[in-house]
Length: 146
Image (cartoon, rainbow, N blue to C red):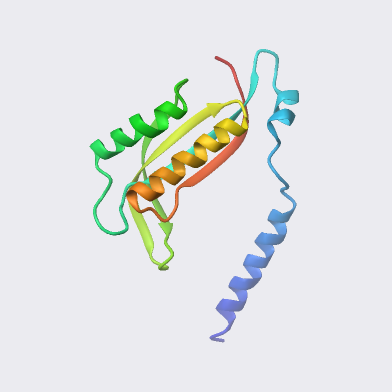
């Protein structure tokens, strides 16, 4: 009986993996362009999740965040962005649950190698500057109208 729970858990994981295998990949920007209604443009929406807890101790302060936003993010996306306050939770490399205040940065942009490199640079800079284990990036193809 003591082994029933791990087996059940493994079976559920296997079922979820099998179910998700049929989901495929997100459409590319060119695919989204063919499906956007008249008056809309195909863009990418990248949402970056920045945890503010510093693993070595402390927290990224409001002044530090503003400095990072002004010196790193805004120059890479001067056309605009959105910043949201959030509270996140995730399982760290140590296995423990980490709960922390976070900032979400939402970027809407046409897909390009230049923007992809800029986003990678933003993530790398934040990770190094504040000793972060990870910065989550979520990408979706979207249709937008300004």
